[in-house]
Image 1 (cartoon, rainbow, N blue to C red):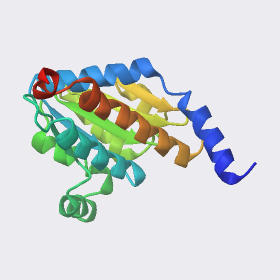
Image 2 (cartoon, rainbow, N blue to C red; image 1 turned 90 degrees about the horizontal axis):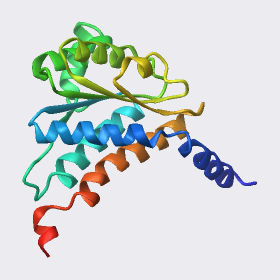
Image 3 (cartoon, rainbow, N blue to C red; image 1 turned 180 degrees about the vertical axis):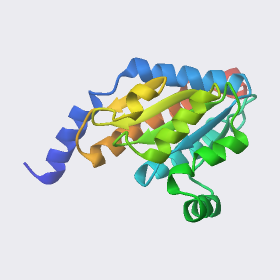
Image 4 (cartoon, rainbow, N blue to C red; image 1 turned 45 degrees about the horizontal axis):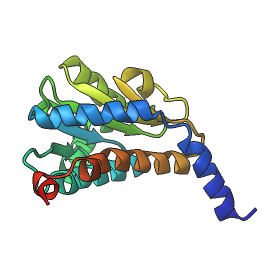
Length: 192
């Protein structure tokens, strides 16, 4: 079997580990936040930071454009000056928490992404969000790490390989985004 064939086979096994009921619950949480005018914050490190930014882009444009109700969502990964200032002057562990202290309110949502489930800055963000009454959704991998049981909803890619975990997180992120883009049609599209 070639490497691409092996990779494909591993991807097909990995996707079977995704609990679709939990994905549906995450969709409900995002819809409730949008409909209630709540904020959604997303965070992660490395590849998970890229997934966070991608998720926000899709929700801000694709799931909001030409819609009566729009998502109030931001990636805590996207302000490089803020992240580097806190990292340099305080600690890397606080880069997401300190941003949440500026913006998050009870009833808001935090989506935390960590392949290992053990990133200290992500864990601190979830702990803080929960302490002020935010709802939390996790995209985790492997056995969920410390993040899995900490989050209100944990969507876990139960695979040991970080590449497959990140692949699954991208797929889940698109399941959520494309629910709003494809399943929920804008009023103008429904009338046609």
